[in-house]
Image 1 (spheres, rainbow, N blue to C red):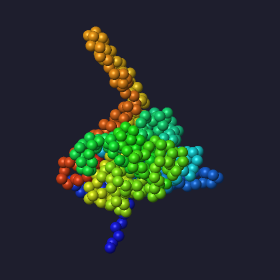
Image 2 (image 1 turned 90 degrees about the vertical axis):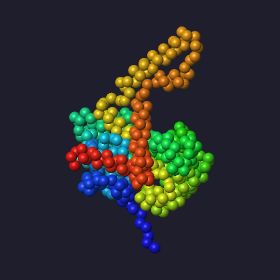
Image 3 (image 1 turned 120 degrees about the horizontal axis):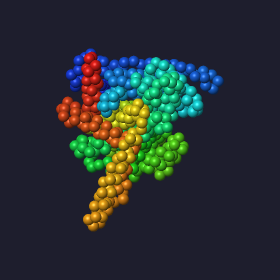
Image 4 (image 1 turned 120 degrees about the vertical axis):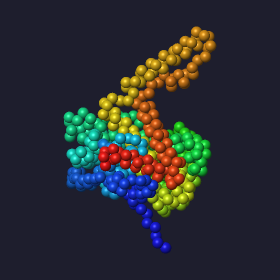
Length: 476
């Protein structure tokens, strides 16, 4: 018997791309132009730390410049390599096209375990990395705009933005060189929660379509659905928290690097997150069964599985045992190409990563626009909205008094109606609209073509088609 080899992450992305373009009528040259990564820059730089020079290796890959600037996060992890970065850059191209953010795809990475360094050491490393990229225009408001990814966050983005500004003192748009910054450094309300919030909005849109829900063997709404979350980092935590607190979902399993928690009656996401933050792991958390092999929890019975950490966690070794009828990929590439085929054959519905975790790049787009316009969203119109609403409420209450009807608006309605939209409300509204529109574009292909039987191929067909249209418009 010949052993089946698990494809690498990059091979998985290529295989999924090939499945889609096989159903399209693209000229071979254009297909190859979309497929290949335009450029990858490898940098090796030294930083003096702890009395000696340490050399670090970093990457910045540009997959497609059909639109500029190109967009994509920077991750800090020991496993970072060129193949991974190029595969992630390709996914960014397709993701941006799918949710119609005007960016090409890029990605960056630094081969480092950030937990092994103090904050001041990480700052020196990050600033040097940013210097190496900035002087080659691989960080630039109009050419290449990074964002946070695994192992990085607001703090690192603030360092990068400041380093770029120091090198480009006359660039009035310097803050737009990177997104995911803290609010006091040009960030935007709702960016930290954005990817997890996008997962929530994606599931809400899926459950609005009874036909799609039935294809997953489910019924009803999100309320009461049993969910297992793999990875309680920024994305997994916010997705689980919002689904539990706002949609009535029951989080029965949470998987982290030191094991997994399982409780059929449901876990308190906020309590688990606080425990994880305080203790650095989930071991010892009360009122839940601890499973040392956390990955085994993904095979437990549930309605929805949310892989929200690393790529390749659902693969040939465990795909057959995954029982969830619906999987939403909150992480990048959590299902390998081989596992994807097994799940398809089982009838499992997969909401693909290029759509499901696009909340981050969507709100990054809003932040970039905010930085270029130099004004926060809502500042010009919020009080005007409130004044117009107040006029209507006052007139209704006057009519009630004059006519003796005696009815009154409920205080809760009145308070909500009179509140004008601030930046956070506008960001959430824009994200919700983006996720709804992108899902509808995917499902239209899913339900209208006999040769398309899953949402992943539908997403690729929509996004590759849009990239191809952009290249044709450029005269290619």
